[in-house]
Amino acid sequence: MDGLLLTDELVLLAYDDAGANRLGRPHLDYGLAGAVLLELALARRVEVADKRLVVTDPAPTGVPLLDEALAAVGDGRPRKPKDWIGKLAKGLPDRVLDGLVDAGVLRRESDRVLLVFPRTRYPSPTGAEPAAETAARHRMTDALVGDGPVDARTAALLTLTGAVGLDRKLFRELPKERVKARLSEIAAGDWASAATKKAIEEMQAAVMIATTTTAAIAVTTAS
Image (cartoon, rainbow, N blue to C red; front, side, top):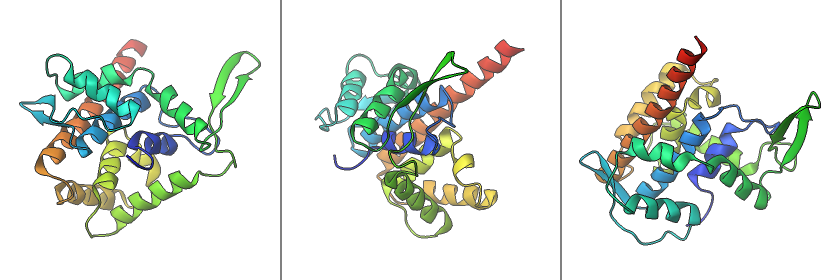
């Protein structure tokens, strides 16, 4: 599998130019777990049957991050997509960030806030927006402002950013109603097989459930 994964693109979009996570935790964690499952669906390794995620092709993708998840999904009884989000989320942000640092796309900066609280940021080596992030933004924006067909990976990335609420941060300059209507058009488009689209819809719903549930628990605890 060539190029950046959806996990890489989501991290780049979630971190601002100063290297801070503007999406927050655990939204990023759950979003990355969803991205892993979306990659497997696009690669036709998994699909949803009877509301359970099942492996349709156990052949390795050649990407360790994906192949470990594929093996986990195929080991044991089938579970609902939402059950896999929490299981796969643990440690994902650090792992994806480490990969981007090793590839030279981001760099790691560690310091302390008020000389006490440790902080780690991940800006680009140049201090400007990474080229890969710019390319992802352009693909997504072109898809939203246009009216033609959208490729499967761009459609999946838009679905993912919508599930974690990142779309509201990325497309502030676009009319909200236009974005909403175009996303509906893209979801209904002929950009993937019916089985793949069904799996992606289920993954989107699973991520949204996970993030919404966490937010509700946080509000309840705070009150």
